[in-house]
Amino acid sequence: MAVEPAGTTASRSAGPTVLHRLPATFKILLTGAIILAAVLTPPARWPVHGLLACLVFTLHTFSAVPLGTLLRRLLVFLPAAALMALAVPASQGFRSGWDVMQAILLRSTVSLLAVFWLAQVLPFRELLQWLSRHKVPPAVVGTLAFMYRYLFVLWDELERMRSARKARTFGSGGMLFRWQTGIRLIGMLLIRSLDRAARVHRAMLARGWDGQVRFSDD
Amino acid sequence: MHIPDGILSPAVCAVTGAVSVFSLGLCLKQLKTTLSDRTIPLTGMTAALIFAGQMVNFPLMVAPVSGHLMGGVLAAVLVGPWAGCLAVTLVLLVQCALFADGGLLALGANVLHMAVIGSLGGYAVYATIRRLLGGTQAATVAATAIASWLTVMAASALFCLEFQLSWPAQQLPGSDFSFASLFTMMVTVHSVIGLGEAIISGAVVGFVLRHRPDLIATPAGATASETSEEAASPRRLFPAAGRAVTAGIIASLAVAAFLAPFASGHPDGLESVAEQTAIESLAAEPQVLVLADYEIPAPVASWEAAPLWQRLSVSLAGLLGTGTVLLTAWLLGRGMKPRTEPAGLTHGR
Image (tube, rainbow over all chains, first blue to last red; front, top):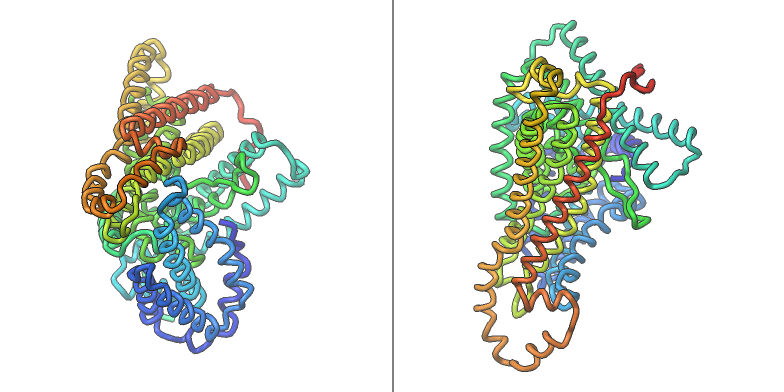
């Protein structure tokens, strides 16, 4: 995970296109259908994967997804999928398993592109509304909303602690040292965030929180 | 660890998804009574915490590759198995929906591996080992480390099984594909990954215990007063601890010995069917293939030639990994010697 939180929310709120305004159900079903088609297509019919990729790329274009964003995302996640796919022939001593690897690569690339598109055109708020409309328990949706609210707060906190560490250690140190500081970083973040959870809970109680989630229609 | 789409078949995704949804329902039912109105702030914050904690990279031997925490066991140790499972599930959901990290169809499998096995299964192992070791702080750290390693191993073994079911022999026409050697590699690689997870989780729990022991939830049946009472009377504790350590080592060795051949042993039966179906294509060009197999003295080729040695080596790897994990757990536990005053790190904001 090397995705920075900053660009994601800003780019999503900027300029919604026609595809952004489609109903959430349609967007989710379309993505699911594309992935299902990609996974069910045998590797011998690779032109179908090509067509699906073209379709997804068209969707990206009409949703005004910047090419740089798309490429950066691919650069983060495609190597991971490729490594997993490469593990198949590698375990066979590179003598067989190439067809499996080819199938996994084709399928996962199309699927990755499709999920990127969904992530771009489905704002988190809309996803929450969709989930609560579709009988997902309010406790789950409420927790999800809470998590999303504090995720960026904790990211900022982590970033502050990281730069403090860098400032104190001149950004260097051996591997053992970096493991130690990494563990302390997580430990401190943990203590602070659980304390924060207790504080927030008390504040919620003070405002009449009774454990029931209520959504305001906006 | 996040499985992208395209590796598992839709049927496998559907089954794992159903299991995950069922487990999630169980968690929600339990949370209603255990955490009640604290559920949302505590679970939500834990989920955000695990997500943020995964951004801390740990350098590995190979320079460009770095590992990170997965956090299923850590979440369960902090807030209990039910809230931990829900928290990790939400982390996976957000990673999928926001960053396309992990597949959409494969979400159920990912939840099963990291949240259900990680938090629910991991907590069961953690609570058992912790009780066996006497419920001290050192026992908590050691139990966290062992449970972390075992959950990663269990998840990788389950993934191997799912992979086998996703790729039936008909889809691999005429290839001499050996699932067993793939599984050997998966389990071996994950025994190392699990070691990283064990070290990080154990050390983080140790850090929290040193500075804010009140934040670690005590398992049901072992209340805070009970543990302090046990710690106060060392004479009664020690013989029990000696027996408990032995029992714990035997138990985890048994689990590892069970898990490791399970990963390669179970598919062997299926594989023999695949061999029988592919035997005609083999018979068409008999000599060349057999010779080709024996001419290559690579270790992989010899594994395929001698399945017994292969299974033995997996078991050995499992035992060796277990030994390393137990040593790590013991070292982490030794670092837990009670210190009089925390070194000024606890000053919150």
